[in-house]
Image 1 (cartoon, helix red, strand yellow):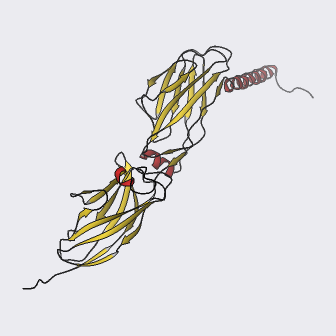
Image 2 (cartoon, rainbow, N blue to C red; image 1 turned 30 degrees about the vertical axis):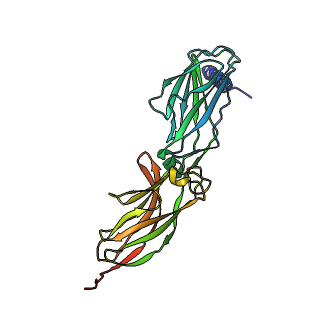
Image 3 (spheres, rainbow, N blue to C red; image 1 turned 60 degrees about the vertical axis):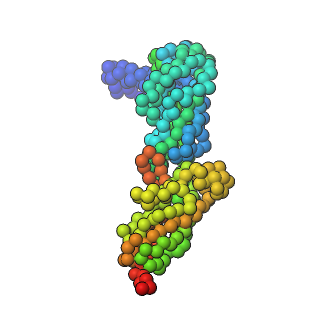
Length: 298
């Protein structure tokens, strides 16, 4: 077939093909320059301590990696525990930039060809992680090694976020008839149906001035807000007694309530958990109290 391309076009085409082949080969080499072996926990729980993450890289570039840094980008709400760097083998590693605990950088000693550098970090999960995951996000870390003349990036396997799911299952009773000034009790049962445990939660009782929560048999009553906070010491008496409100465990709180007014009223009950100033609400229950005037004997 006759070549219809002018000579200068043929030369340009050859040069272009050559450059494409060069970059493809360079990318292939870059992809093989470092072998990663990173491990993540199968799950991490919101507001419940740290989990370990292991990072390991093997130098296959054919030369020493100098001026080596490793950047670890964590998902929203997964925060590096500053000072937790440990289990360093194959060289030295130190914290370089940790002011943003979701995007941290470590400096490392030079890594010779064929050598492996490994280290461990710890991270916890806050309420931003809960919002991220319930909004459709996937927990996965991005790790980048940067060195003189190149860089290599990898992503870890995904891991699961565990969090509580509180539900008020029963209120005994949902209706009460009392006299003005009378004190009565109400039992509220809360169940944790989530995979994650809680170290505390608060039972909130919203009502008008005709009622006042004056006591509880479980937890601590805040007399200003009339909220009852249940925590570790209370959880040791239920379930497996480990001090956590675990999945499928339930607890019953007996409120002592005084009818301080003379008008019938409705209460709104809900249980909330969270940390760092953020809260997640349970379902709500609406018990009703009928208050009547009491005519004392004269």
